[in-house]
Image (cartoon, rainbow, N blue to C red):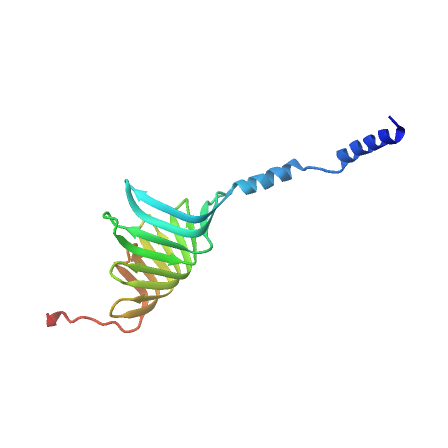
Length: 183
């Protein structure tokens, strides 16, 4: 072996020892951060209760964050179909953004939120919260409710989850009232 070959081997060994430094804490933090996020595309999820399908959720994308508080985010919109016991659609909910908080079973929807029930009543708003434990929708933002005969505007809303019974907190607009003495 020549002297230049020995020098090249020694130089290579020295460079490999000092050229790269791995901070194990930094690597573990990076790995831990990647492990607390799950992502999915073309989402189709069913929710069942006591062996019966209650809802179907579809969304183009989903991100689930496992750090506390755990939540699932739908950045590209979502659609939820709610079913009754005979699997008839009770209501349809769509929004461009949704966030599901896993610990308390609450859902926050925003941006072009639309709820339509089987009676044809339609709710349009920019923000809506759903408390699944109480089975209630609520909002403190502007809302518009359209029925086959009326359109009612207002600020604030509370409703059951199939949107068959609702209360607008500060209603505005004209409402057609049926006279019970005419029947």
